[in-house]
Image 1 (cartoon, one colour):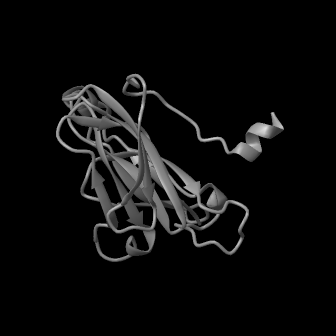
Image 2 (image 1 turned 90 degrees about the horizontal axis):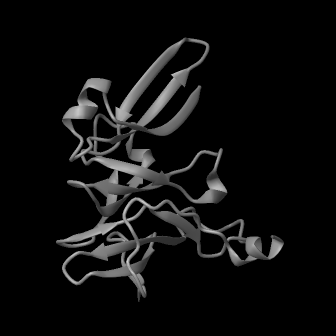
Length: 181
């Protein structure tokens, strides 16, 4: 059995109809290789993309997924999903949510472990980082959220010296990994 969380944009025909507001969903997909079966289940009623997990759980069973909320032409917030809720009958797996506010759009999220070298750290013990741009004030900010918090509480907000364009992909690299380069 292969189990994964994946984005689903729907049919090819619907792509042209939804250009201004993509209807991307995150789904838990179970593939029974021997049985030649596929089961899909939406994890949230919201339109989501750019899912990320604690990198220490890559390739392993994990509980939490963080994803960007898709609004009209922008990423308008972030959610935390609890995959243990996915096996219940159609229940929304959202356990935390943060919206950036009117006129604000954000980037893709990244999970940064609080203690990356601690093998006993809890899976959601860390930070979710991204940036957001406020069209009202023309300010871009780097956001650091507490990944454990039920509202993804802001731990730090850093005003950036210039605008970060929407749609820019990024990568979090630890100081330890930078020193290896």
